[in-house]
Length: 347
Image 1 (cartoon, rainbow, N blue to C red):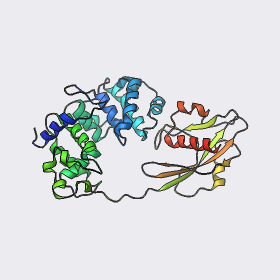
Image 2 (image 1 turned 90 degrees about the horizontal axis):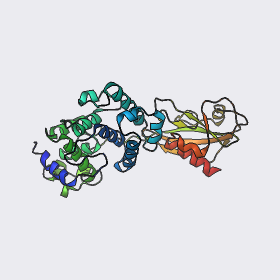
Image 3 (image 1 turned 120 degrees about the horizontal axis):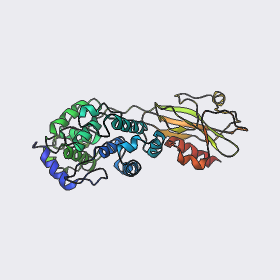
Image 4 (image 1 turned 180 degrees about the horizontal axis):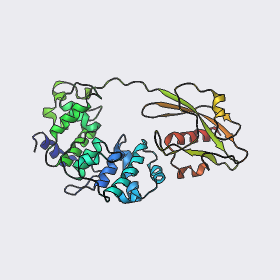
């Protein structure tokens, strides 16, 4: 057992967080549940994930159940979690594990990396937490703890490789899964981004940032580049019965496989209104609604101007007609829900 590891494990035994996917001390973790929680927790807070995790397990208790589900069902259940590529890969991975591994996740870290949607962090998390093997999952919490512990001056994201190497030196041969979760808990509750509660940290005596600098100055980061803003016209086309035209986005790419109101391309320039009207998915007299819908994605801001119109007949369309009260039955991303709300406020 590493000298550095034991104080953290002792702390974890006293202070561990009670989380739905975390097994009680001495119990063996279910790889399916570990995998599910780790995919959901990417880019998402613990508080948000809890209800989704419970819902998914109720709907699909085993990896075979998830593999047997329709992708649209999975995307619909995922609504609100964002980063929808995770949901598509979740379903894809379940299919591969069911088909190629008889419903059992491989215990080898390298083989896990071959599965859809599983990267180095998730593979290491499953290996250590579910199978008890020595592996070092490194997420943002772990990077922050390690950068402060060793006072790493190299800036993020270039420092990621070094931080991963340093984290690996800390991982003990025994209780690797507990140690991984202890590192995550330490970063989430004690060594947090804006405040370091050094007085209650089990590693306070050896932390270089506490001894020689200000812990919250670490990890060092490059200045963020400003996000560009993309614009588009979005079409709210209705029939006489009030149904609205929806279409499905391509499976690959941003919001892949989800439903949306048709729109022009999302571009970083002003769009000519007359050109936009010529791109209408159905013939209708279009009226521009006041204001615009704003939404922020990871790499850009989006501004949508709504063009509203009604068709007089049932023209051939690429999409489906859905009444607003039935929107809840479709996988609509947050940006589209904002559009629906904006239209309802303008009527």
